Length: 342
Length: 263
Ligand SMILES: Nc1ncnc2c1ncn2[C@@H]1O[C@H](COP(=O)(O)OP(=O)(O)O)[C@@H](O)[C@H]1O
Ligand SMILES: [Mg+2]
Image (cartoon, rainbow over all chains, first blue to last red; front, top):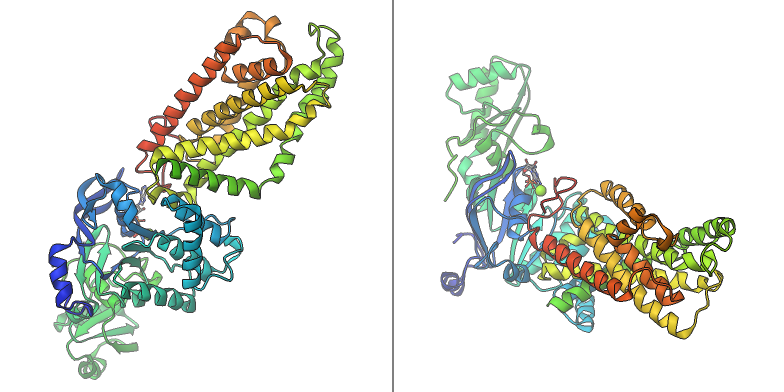
């Protein structure tokens, strides 16, 4: 149980002991021919939790979600959604889950209302009930005005909301969101997440992937995934606490020399990082010292609280914004705080 | 869940078809070209060699079959498009049984082919075919059977494709020979022996012959044979299509190959 989860009152704890976890993944492996997209994932998402899967492109997030949503079969290992096996109890799993895919999954030429109506029909609602449910959800998400237009004529934000509406038509107990806000501007993203927060508040499990750091911060717990493995799993606060203290970032005219010097003085730097980053218990106090003694010219110095990006960088030797994309993979993995599995 | 699933898939496809309803008119071009250009050109050169009737009424059922064949195939192509993007993924994670998706696709394609046939039908009058009540009713029945056959053909093949560029090429390479060998444009009775034999293996031949027989009373195959053959073909292809949809659990579109015989 996450200590920081606000909803974990006594009743919920007792409940969690008897009801199955929302998602339970054990030793999950998925290979596409040569490519090993998942290399042994272990993961438990509790009911009612907001759980984030955070990782760079190609880490295996979509693959994991496709397996959980019964669209792909695992190569090895097992996965359960609400206690049902995703391979042997496929139909039961399908009835329970709602998913927003990374790519659009609405019929662009049909109206939002028609899309939702069809969704209701697919889940076995009679036409009148499906129509009522569509209107209900459209109003709830503030899409009622634009629901008559072909989906392709909606704005990006409205379209993603329509995807959310599609996933919600059947009132699923668990909601999967795969990079649901990809490509949206900050405002539209905020609007989207405020709806999701509302859903989570009603006790629904929300399991989402993202590579926007600030989106992951709202989660009760976060799993950091890299190259098909979970490298850490904890509450956002605990993850950041792992770094201890704060982070200093330096830009010098000779990073290599600076690194050697720092390492010689016993400062932990990151060997593979594209920039010079060091973690220290009291960065503000040590920085003036460093600036005085470093044998290279310091062009820029930054001190800040550790972010999730720093945690990821520390654990994998790589960040995952585009500016880090060209950094060499591998190495540095499983550093001092590495073995992240609970 | 099965029937509701089929219904949902049919509603989806018919809603999309309705957006493209202009295609019903555009779809007239090809059959009318055959009927009035080919019909007039060849008809006049053959004179009275058609054994009684003139050429245009003779090819009318063939042309009707052609329009249904191409409409059904076009409907099946949406399966390939759907796989690549769009709503279909949402269909695949819904609890609709896989066979219902296959059956719904076949039903929707057949419905579209039938509608296209109904749009071509009034031109019978211009082709000089008498539309008596009895023959017309028989024809409407035969058209239904033809529509389902063509749609099942399209779906059973399209379900194996994941590339939108390959499927139309392959389907044209298969459809045109099937159409030309079917006796839609010439009497099988007087065709060379090998063509008659080939026609026995061609579903389009049975469908066209049945429609022609219904309308003009001239059959090449025994109508019972045609009925039996078409029913058997529909059953076989439907079974094949259901099997493909049933199997493809690893079937979201990502990275799949163009075509997979083993599916
Ligand atoms: N259908 C596929 N065939 C082959 N490789 C794939 C397929 N889908 C994904 N991959 C590979 O698997 C890895 C994980 O991909 P994915 O799950 O999409 O990651 P993410 O969603 O985290 O970006 C990547 O290396 C990707 O190239
Ligand atoms: Mg992805």
